[in-house]
Amino acid sequence: MPLSLSSSPTAAATTAASGAAHRFLYPHRPCLHRAGKNFVLLSFVPCRASSVARGLIRGMADVETQKAASPSILAGHKQALISLSDKRDLSLLGDGLQGLGYSIVSTGGTAFALEEAGVSVTKVEEITHFPEMLDGRVKTLHPSIHGGILACRDHNHHMEALSRHNIGTFDIVVVNLYPFYEKVTSANGITFEDGIENIDIGGPTLIRAAAKNHKDVLVVVDHKDYPAVLEFLQGKQDNQHFRRKLAWKAFQHVASYDSAVSEWLWKQTEDGDKMPPSFTVPLSLKCTLRYGENPHQKAAFYDDRSLSLVNAGGIATAIQHHGKEMSYNNYLDADAAWNCVSEFKNPTCVIVKHTNPCGVASRQDILEAYRLAVKADPVSAFGGIVAFNTIVDEDLAKEIREFRSPIDGSIRMFYEIVVAPKYTEKGLEILRGKSKTLRILEAKKSEKGMLSLRQVAGGWLAQDSDDLTPEDIKFTVMSERIPQEAELQDAEFAWLCVKHVKSNAIVIAKNNCMLGMGSGQPNRVESLRIAFRKAGEEAKGAALASDAFFPFAWKDAVEEACQNGIGVIAEPGGSIRDGDAVDCCNKYGVSLVFTNVRHFRH
Image (cartoon, rainbow, N blue to C red):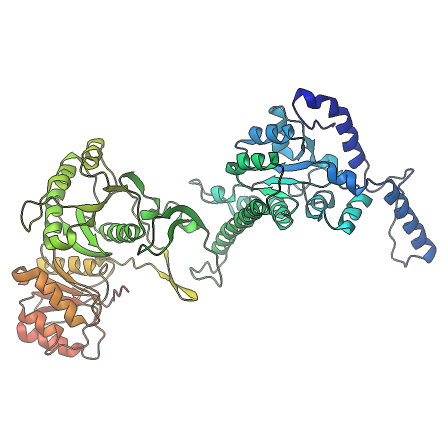
């Protein structure tokens, strides 16, 4: 098919010359099984070629070299190779390239779409002289394609090699890949065989080849880059920085794609262990942040594109309905609040400050739960993050907007973020009126069974997420006094709260309400004293939960808790002095239950 270098009227006169150039660059001749003026049929037999035969072959090569196109002609013929699964903005690209004088080579559905848009196209098989084979697995894997991409234009021997074999150069390669990620994460699922068929081979090969030779070949993998590429091509000066950025993006695109294939295939193995010998985490920039934990630190937020996190919920996928842009610390605090409140089955409010829950309450009346959560520590709650596991309607929104600090009854409570699973239209309207800066997030509950990653200098730690709830464990009574049903419920509530407090962690709770907590102290006694100071007189008869065992009992944390009137203590057990803890609780008539589960949080 003759190629039109431009769709403009002024370019029409060049169409015939363009067609001739194309026929010269790509003469229509099979590579094998044809004898003609310049070609012979070669039969390969298991014997050593004679010197005469070798001379004959060299002579034939010399003849073909003399008749081949010169490097200068090849270099002057501008070509773009386009092969796309995602065809968004294809007509914009095709028209733009054709208007700039590029001949376009394309494959299958992409060629058809370009022709439908009125763009002249040469199909790949017209260049390779091979049809698509093996159900489309082999289309572009051919020297006539990859030679034109990988040849360095400033290497004479490269260009001479192209000339000998009548191979034209490609100046632009535009490729994206089979939608493997979308296929294997679809709601309908996918068979193993279909998954394998959706692994792209030719596409990554083209992308990598063009990216490697980006000094001479522009590689484009994102339709959002089409306008910038066309603008670049219109310019008179080359920009290697622009080329390198596109090459980086291309390699990153392939790396992310390969990580999805690797993750999926690992899950299909017999082991399927969460801790594979190696794995890649594909991160995609969601936004840059004003700064990190402190103003002198640069920061950004990335989406994790791992297959295991598709539809897994969490703060990363939350919708922001209103307010100032999220900060680094906002994300950490919102994540802590959402993870905590999502653990509770009954309507619950959680208030977090610096990733620690300072107020937690569960009630059938969510307004009451909110008030009690604030009351637990109103000083810490001010400027904190408020999370609910129920819909925020008009009444709750009004309460959040108007509620006054329990300290003086006059100052409206101020919050950085409100996060909930859903909002009514009226609820959103009211919350938007509380403050221009109040961030309103709508989040989906995080799935269980996720892999938790944490960075240390020079490496990463990986572990299962801590998903255990009171329903998953047994509370074993160790003391002579058996806790009453209400006390046991308080112990379970406190134990679920302490799971989300930084170690060393102590939580005091009663009637499904946190009364006080101590967090982050180097010794457990100090955390216990902080919790009692916040709980005050309400601690009498309440439940106390510890994230880890008590190493000492007498004249230590356990005895102090008993002397302050606590009703029941829940701890993991496991100390060599567990017997002392039991004896101490028996002396003071306090119930002691072991969970056999530790909840360290560093």
